[in-house]
Amino acid sequence: MNTKGLGKAGGVLLVGLMLSGCRGTISEKPPIHPNMNMDQQPRVEAQEVNNFFEDGRAMRQPVEGTVARGFRKSDAAYYEGVDENGDWISETPVELTRALLYRGQERYNVYCTPCHGITGDGQGIIMTGQYGYVPAPTFHQDRLREAPDGEIYSAIYNGVRNMPSYAHQVPVEDRWAIVSYIRALQASQNVSEEDIANYDIDLDELKAEFSAVAEAEAEFEAAKEAQSADVEATADLGKEIITQYACGACHNVTGDPGGIGPTWKNLFGSEAEVVTEDGSRTTVTKDADYIIESTVYPEAKKTAGYENSVMVAYDYLAEHELQSIVEYIKTLSDN
Ligand code: HEC
Ligand code: HEC
Image (cartoon, rainbow, N blue to C red; front, top):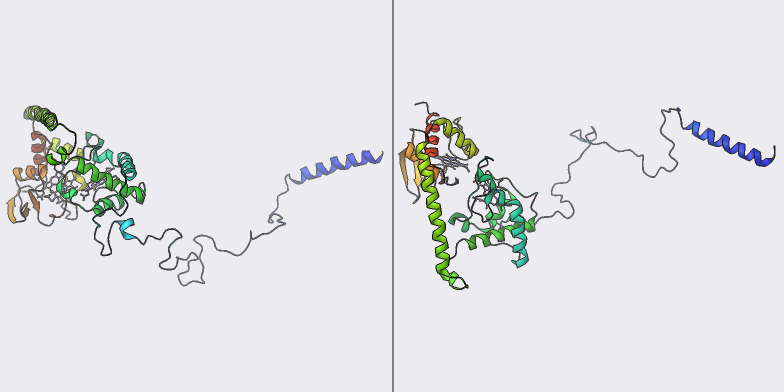
């Protein structure tokens, strides 16, 4: 054998040894770790007990007042929509630009239209009935026109009563963009004739268009009423309507006083104090007329104790539907 042959044989043997070394040899010892870096050192695991601390926990809370880097939100007006006294700020703290409004429109259309509708009239897709969500109010009412910007911001940031917060979906700058866009929507739906005179718009043509719409609506209402006359009002139908419009989000039937609206248990036939629109207080008997009025025009008489809470007007319900709600509420009274 020459030396060349020896070398070859040695190579084959080495490869053989290496392969067999990897197979089947199980060891309990930690693997050889030539360069330790800082891979192994004393440390505590998450949730581990550590008796060094009084509470026995290894995981420590950050020192009180600690703020993660880049997360200091000291500007309350910008981040929360409130001033130093905690009152809602009246005006958006970001500069109003065309770009901001367009951004607001785009974000509004993504996140708010399903419930509030494309023009902010509260006629979003949830109102097609099959979804059973609490109806969202229209933005075109004095209460929300006069609400400070901070309050609109707060609806997005904190949520409001039945509306969840959208803070996770909508970052701060976009919230203000949406607030500004809602202001634009409100302005667009509440224009005086003098304002229109400043634009190149034919007022007569516009009025004709509006009266055509009003006529069509009146026809629709009349047809609905005619149809309504043929349908019998029943408690079962009432219960269905209440489920469809999610009245239960604010009214319970158990007598629990803790809801957003008053309980319906023993409501029918009861006597109670209400606050009327001009702020005076009277005592009323809660009969069918009262229940219907409270449903179609909640502002008329507000139950004492709930005068600061809000209910959307269900003025689009047909007569037989309203009567059915009354029939259902009647079944919840013991007397
Ligand atoms: C899933 C449906 C839904 C979506 C989406 C939604 N809202 Fe609402 N919103 C509601 C409902 C329901 C109410 C009424 C809550 C109540 O009175 O209990 C409401 C109320 C409001 C109010 C009135 C607050 C008040 O004081 O009465 C504002 C303002 C508002 N929403 C803004 C927004 C904005 C802005 C968005 C988009 C970022 C949005 N909402 C998305 C359902 C929704
Ligand atoms: C967003 C919450 C909310 C929803 C949803 C709601 N209500 Fe109300 N409702 C209230 C509040 C708050 C009051 C008390 C203040 C008032 O009278 O406006 C009230 C009062 C009433 C009253 C008078 C109760 C009393 O004790 O005098 C009736 C009747 C009523 N609602 C019917 C309905 C019907 C029917 C529906 C569904 C079609 C409905 N409500 C949906 C909040 C709500």
